[in-house]
Image (cartoon, rainbow, N blue to C red; front, side, top):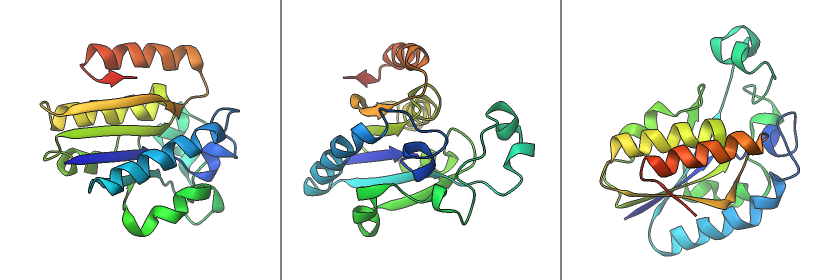
Amino acid sequence: MKALVVIDYQNDYVVGPLSTRFTQMIEGNICQRIEETLSAGGDVYFVMDMFNENYLQTPEGKRNPIKHCIRGTAGQELFGKMNNYVSKAKILRKDTPGCEELFGRLRHYGEIELCGVETDKDIIANAIIARSSNPNARIIVRQNCVASRDSLMADEASDIMRGLGIEVM
């Protein structure tokens, strides 16, 4: 069985303070991966940042001092066409790059695919969680389904993921 994990494809990452020119470009590719996963009987997870108003005073906010995905704001909502799949997906909230709840959820899948934003932070953190929770699973990251603000760091993160046995296509 397959799991598709869509990470942080939220308004603040796609059209807000953390957006890049690439984040909107991957929406169609992510939708295609969702459709294919659902058609094959797989599960889709939306892993979403959600912070309190005091975000800038938290350890995460001090490392990344850009206020975003604040609880109750439009910025923390899923972006665009992702909303068409909410009823067919499982939504997990996180307040760090990696989603702790994924660890237990991904244990029984034969294939885990990750997509979304911040390859050099959130994608790699959750790929490591996937690898750690399910060492025998095939884990995939498609480069046409991820985006990052720092392309050099994204390339380095992709190299690290390859070193961990994650297929970066």
